[in-house]
Amino acid sequence: MNISRSRTFTFMIMIAAILLWHIYKKYGINLYIEEVGDFASIFTSIVLEAIPFIILGSLVSAIIQTCISEELIARIIPKTSIWGYFGAALIGLIFPVCECGIVPVTRRLMKKGLPVGFGVTFMLAVPIINPVVIMSTYYAFYDKQAMVILRITGGFAAAILIGIIVNALEKDKQSLIRDFLDNGNYCNCGCDNLYSGNQNKLLSIIEHANREFLDIMGYLIFGAFISSVFQVVIAYGRINFISDNKIFGIIVMMLLGFFLSLCSEADAFVGRSFLGNYSFSGVLAFLILGPMLDLKNLIMILGAFKKSFVIKFSVVTVCIVFLISFLFMMCGI
Image (cartoon, rainbow, N blue to C red; front, side):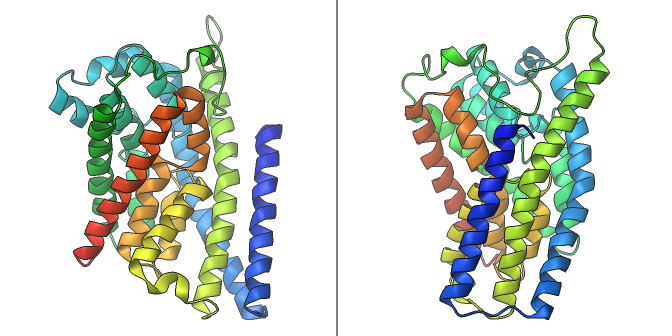
């Protein structure tokens, strides 16, 4: 991680510590050795289980970013309205672009003529519907494999619906991209700092994978810390009101998905740890919204697109994900 990322990560840890202290102070909670042991076990298991998939995802996305051009991706996506949305939503099965790199890739595709709706669907679906994320979700929910299907179908439906709605709402489709960032490097994963010419592509892949792995690990450790604290606090009956109401649970999990900014290759392991205290629909909201819209990606989206577009996109995304999660809840999931 670079200096700014390190400072951000340190700031996040400080905020988490302050919030934790406030909760324990307000509710008069005393720590016991059993709780500390449970915290350590949960934290360690989340991190260790997620690391192999982070390594795999970093390598795959590095190869994609280095060897595959946006022109090839644009040619593969169908140009007709209906099939274009389906193609944009499913192309991650072939080209699993990294979650950090998806924003600049989408921006370049849209600038080269990809319709807004297709671009939005592509940006939202690829971090969920790709082989590495599907495998990690399958492994994390090995005993509840319905979550894999729910995440894929829910993410697929949400990405297409959001793409269609945003495309209909965005009237000024020609000027929604920020032009002054053409030469900027606003992605920290290394996809815009690749070796060219006669330099070895292998070095580009290694650099990209290394940057992305270190970047993701910072967010994973923070997310695992928060998740472990939640599990211990709720499991020992310290604060039960958080998970009593299913609708409130969906909202809380969506907020966690946004602020934790976890990589989609590792968020399933954090989400799995919440399943004992939240419903399927709440955890599903966490697993769908996080890859689509989190704090880290929102900052990059604000740098790539005009503010008016980002506001519409963000509101529609939150509403659609909540609606889909609510419908799953009403179906008894």
